Length: 443
Ligand code: NAP
Ligand code: HSE
Image (cartoon, rainbow, N blue to C red):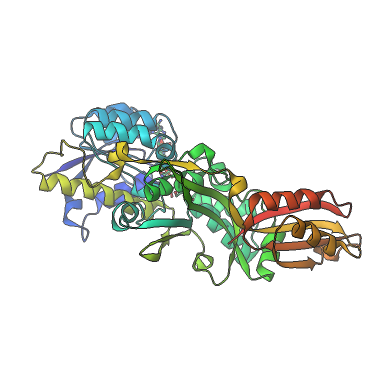
């Protein structure tokens, strides 16, 4: 029984999906039953990396959704609109949707899930997080019996690729970003990658699945690698750490009404060299899930790019095609138990706690006068605020310096953010402190 696929987008991911559909030999037998029926693009004249019958292409994505020959709508066009409206349109006409669009799901997942539940169609999103790594289905199903304590990971391929090449080859930021764009890793607007927004979309989705409730995307404190100074990467290296853009979601409490209280953030973070996330290089991603009773489970693999992402998209298509097959050709008319996204009505409430009450380890680089007693005065400010220090080191300023200033790097133990901020306010007020040059998280 042939299943008609309508592709919205034929860029990096769409072309990867089309390539798999065009070469079913040696894959799951169901791939051979998937037929690409229509493809929406913006520009009919654009050169495509795949040979497709030109009559399949259209600049009218609504027509692709509405086409009676299309059974499953695959949204890989990106952006918020018209992607959101097209997904809702497909649901409204009873067509299951597969999407790689984390920006839409992180912001409109609740609306989409409610519409899908009401109409009884699947919306599957495996490709939205971690590229080729299976992480959505494991979090939804395989780890469902656990109390999830923490989900932390490297979930942006572009920034991990940039950081790896900067650290390994001393490559220049701009040149490596251009390579990431050429390789199809970066978003259409790479600001989403380098400023941390893409990772924030993804951790919002993972936290929603891990904690069973909608996580407010706009409230996630986010900083990217765009203002990261190569000096901090070098100092971190000398201290035994790598620097990674980490996204972390952690349950820190439960309110009296059952609301899950979460600490969720995205920030460049020093990762100790012996930590499992420190060995994740290039475009690879890794997600570490810590749960009770499972312990630590790590998911690792290529986090972006045409083939890996298409692999996840096609897995979702096959999931739906398989259900269609066992249900005798009809898609189920009831909300499907496979997909908790459809059970959004039964979700818990989640809330992000005030960052001031969260606890973290910190890395601070201070530019100070090079004079006797500075380190002591800085140590006193931390001590008086109740911030315990792991190490305090003076580095030679780049180029040797002229003796007029010093660079002092501090790594704290895990401390209350409000205490850390109080210490930093006192340190900034010290006459010998010229600037707080960098403030990063430390794992
Ligand atoms: P892309 O290379 O920019 O491709 C986007 C495609 O959508 C293009 O073919 C474009 O047409 C088409 N398109 C965009 N707006 C359209 C509109 N209004 N009407 C018709 N067609 C339209 O993007 P991508 O890298 O494949 O990413 C697609 C989605 O997958 C995004 O949501 C992205 O976040 C997500 N994703 C990407 C990756 C990755 O590694 N690239 C990994 C995971 C998830 P033209 O070709 O004519 O311009
Ligand atoms: N731009 C994204 C990344 C694509 O680099 O991780 C994969 O979601």
